[in-house]
Length: 239
Ligand SMILES: NC(=O)c1ccc[n+]([C@@H]2O[C@H](COP(=O)([O-])OP(=O)(O)OC[C@H]3O[C@@H](n4cnc5c(N)ncnc54)[C@H](OP(=O)(O)O)[C@@H]3O)[C@@H](O)[C@H]2O)c1
Image (tube, rainbow, N blue to C red; front, side):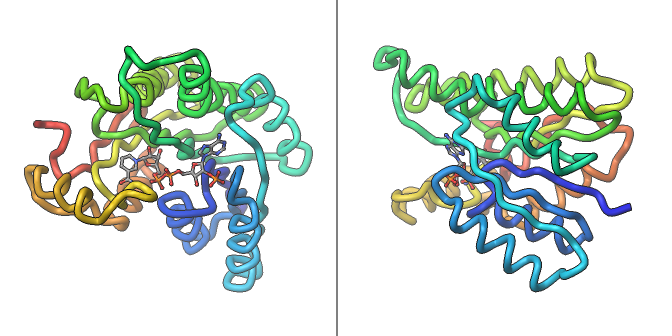
C-alpha cells in the first residue's frame, strides 16, 4: 500500500526537497503551505506529472492560528484514511533577544514551532494507529545564542516534545528529529553571511540537501529509532 506523508512548509526550499524525495521513493505527499500556496499547488501538479500513479495535494493553513491546528488535521483526515509520516518543517527565523520580546512575537514563534506541531502530531496520534513524526529543528538548539532567542526557545521546546512524545506514544508512533546546520541562506540574507557561518563549522562545509534527505530516509526506515535528534550540521552544535 502506498504511504502518505504530510510536510508542513513543503512548497519551497528544504520542505520542497523532502516532498520531491518522498515522491521519488513512491510516497503520496500532502504539501502544506501558507503564503506559498500557489507554489504548493504547482509542486503538486509537477509531481503528479512525474509520478502519475501517486497522489499529491496542496493544503493551506496558517500555523500561527494554532487553536485551529486540530481542525486542520480533521479536514485532512476526511480525505485520507491514513497519514504515515508527518514532517513538522515549517519555520520562521525571526530575530529578537528576550529583552525585546513582546506577546505577539512570543505567541507567533511558539505557535509555528511548538504549539501547532504538537497539536498536528497529537491529532494524528489520536486518529491513526501507527505513524512516524520527524520534527525539523536547528543545530542551534544546544546553544544559547541570543540573537534569535524566542525562535530558539520555541525550537528547543519542539526538541523536548520529540523526546517526551517518543516515550508517551510508543510503541506505535515513532518521533524523531533532524537538527540541520547551514543548508540554505536565510531568505533575504546575503550569501556572504551564509558563507561565514559555514566557514565556522568544524567541517567548514555547507550542509548538503542530500545529507538532510539521507538522514530523513534513515529516520523513516529504521524502526528501532525513536526520540532521536540527528544533528546534520557539519559539527556546528559542537562549538
Ligand atoms: N535553511 C537552513 O539552512 C536551516 C538551518 C537550520 C535549521 N533549518 C530548519 O529547517 C527547516 C526548513 O528550513 P527552510 O530554510 O527551508 O525553512 P523556511 O524557508 O524558513 O520556512 C519553510 C516554510 O515555513 C512556512 N511557514 C512559516 N511561517 C508559517 C506559518 N505561520 N504558517 C504556515 N507555514 C509557515 C513557510 O511557508 P509559506 O511560504 O507557505 O508561508 C515557509 O516556506 C526549518 O524548520 C528550519 O528552521 C534550516
